[in-house]
Image (cartoon, rainbow, N blue to C red):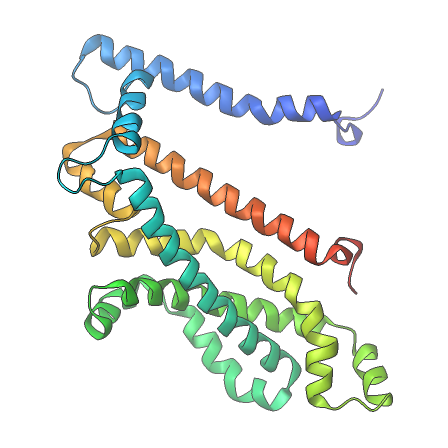
Length: 272
């Protein structure tokens, strides 16, 4: 008899097993919603799918009476622009810090202790400081995202740099390569796919910092809208927004994974 630990599901079975938890969650939600609405039709905690659909249509396809904007799309554009800018800044700074602290012992001795200390500071704890320094505009929100995920990216790339076999560095020096050539021609090409992986892993934290900043001080954005309507217990709006954020995060991760495979196909075969 084949042991369970050795059984591998077929592709179709794997897909069905992957869908099963979602189906069960939907069924559980429908049953709970119907039970609550049967007792109290005005209940707002678990709206029906009809109510959720009406809310989605209202937010996405009807212009706001106050601003004339289609709120879902306007909020999405604002949030994605903040997230993209913050992640790009974090990726650039993280790459430089990770590369140089991992490759140059002198730089590591000077910068690594500070990088470690900064990585231990809860980014949300300094959000009031950012608001005081940069004001309540876009800069403080982008800065929170960048400060929040830069240490993670930098430390991950630092570790990846140190994992590159020293034989490669010795061979490059034997062929006459200088420090700058080794960094640009040997280390950097191998770190770029690792940078994409680090960004993918840090996006969850990036979304957290974005939502927190928008909830506290913003006039638009997905986080702002969720915390705005919570005072009315508008779960028919909150739940679709949460699902939309989840879908966006999944699509961004999928896009980055595809970009990594396309630009660096050798990575899946093992760079070192």
